Image (cartoon, rainbow, N blue to C red; front, side, top):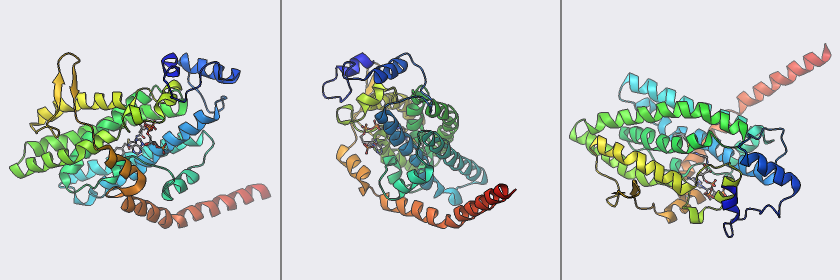
Length: 329
Ligand code: FAQ
């Protein structure tokens, strides 16, 4: 794979000749499939790329609680409420594993949080779309967690040890999330005509935003070539998107819903579905901060951070007192 990437014109990936001996040794470890651990030598850009990707991933988990958290108090039954509550709590846990993995690279969770709150770091575009009704809880679990899993299953094999190990646990929990979402969709798609209409509408609204989760098309992806050479990413954005479409279309058919993109057709020769790209100008607009909910999401996270200040201050005061007591003994 690496050899193939270095030949990619304009990929920005250094050739072996351009590398220092340390960089060559590092690349050899990656190519042998060894895991890189926090205290190992690594190129600065490898560290920076990981901090960017793991940080964005952690922020996505945290901001990703908002669209579903919005529906906990309005879940239709006690059982659905308990399930949704557990799912949203899982997302908080995923954020913490990921911030923990990022911290092993020398950044603090507070710094990452401040970058998110100031709009200097991104989180997944999908969470800038609203959740309008209960059917959206089904579609989010099924499509959004479904898309997340496809990416994260591959990331279990990523080269950075702490990130790869965080992914193993996260994937187990995400599978439950996707199933609970599909279960809601099955109930609604087989329910009253109004419920079926709601399920169809949720699918139609969230399909293209879910496709955008995999990032821009390969030709516009700035980081893929280097990230794949370093095995930070295991597949390109378009490869993952294709896997998602191939997995999801039969699930749509099983629900008895109409395809959200009338152009979806199975290519019998390749075994893959062809599909329409999302509107990429909308995607770039959303990641610039202009999606339907960007302002609300950041305002909600800023409020939570400000409201939690007394807890952080209390914990720090307690830690300082304890340290002073230990020093005096
Ligand atoms: N949204 O060169 P590329 C979840 C940015 S899972 C926002 O292709 P890369 C679970 C990208 O950062 C969702 N920004 O970038 C859950 C870069 O900008 P930069 C999170 C995006 O990194 C479910 C620029 O565009 N999963 O939340 C997006 O090689 C339900 C150029 O793009 C992960 O983060 C996007 N969709 O590939 C939680 C997985 N796509 O940084 C709650 C790990 C691209 O230069 C409820 N991440 N950009 O300013 C990855 O695999 C990669 O980072 C990609 C993007 C594939 C997302």
